[in-house]
Image 1 (cartoon, rainbow, N blue to C red):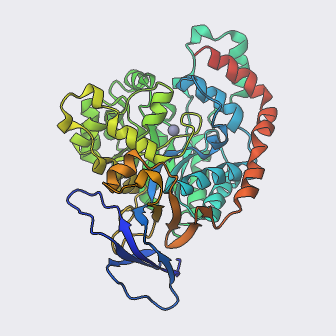
Image 2: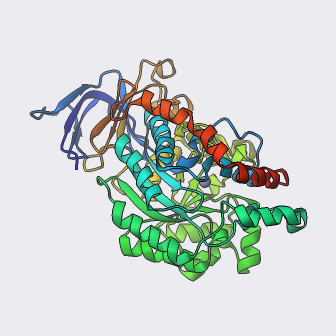
Length: 479
Ligand SMILES: [Zn+2]
């Protein structure tokens, strides 16, 4: 636990929860990793670090509830690729990485998130099979950067049926090459579960802010045994379960063909679903599936930028909110959304449906998207004391400089946050009561050294994965 005390003097606050009003400048005291007090003229404890808050806006740190750190170095490489094509091409950039490369990729992402106001992330990690040393490397990145994170271990024991081309389009030579060099080849379930359990026992609750969750890649790539084991592990260790859910229409069709019912109906029927589950995308849910999610309290993690960029679907945000499904937001990986600015996802979540909804009373509100990006993400991380600037809550907060042009004049902080701020006015970031960014600079890691290390990784990984590239580009060309 962090024992540092921080007193922020006279800061504006952003409170966008329903029924809450902005109280004007206040002092905020942080102690033992929590918000100890919020109010006017708080007494200054001995030894506290004092931050002058005049001209700053304090907001809860944002939660990016779906991301893939291994893809982080691939921004700017994947335009005009659909889901199947990017999934294959991405293998060339992410397979066969060393621990140092895994670490550097995650750190570059952490820096971008922290410096734009995101303090917590669910990292669906990695894509291919992995070992204990890979998990240790990514955990070390979150530890070193001071970020709050769930490392959601991406597991599967079946084929990636949703991204394979139709059998009649695959030549025998390509089928043979794929069988010999498939980076997404499954491995035995028992082996996978041993690694997940070992990772939880070694790393879960590191520094009280890094969690390890089992995270099925997608139900269509997993056996029921794997899905049920994920649920059982989550109950045993009190973790969540993270997964991709119905990102593409093909996945919905595969589920119907395989299960004889929809994907969520199946998960619910076998007992592998519920409040522990956070589900990325949710683009192709039926009304019945939305009702199950609401009843079970399963979290929908929407990624509107990624979905639009690769044309995979449009998340049904108004329907989910109307049904009472807990909603969160994610940026998704850099191959499908090249930045980690969660405010972009917030804006899109608010306005995406307006052209098709003539009754503006049904439009998503600023308060809705603020909740999705804070308390909604916290629910996905199983962190009920995260995402609010209230006494007793975990001390993850961000101070924005109100001198930036998009804040002048300060008319409505909520609207200006969602529609104007893009991370450019972030001055100070505090995670778990500890300063991690001050005056716009990361305090715990050497930004220049990290950038230098990350700059040369992609060419080296691509050179290493020449055989995978031959197959991946051939398969992607069929999609
Ligand atoms: Zn994803």
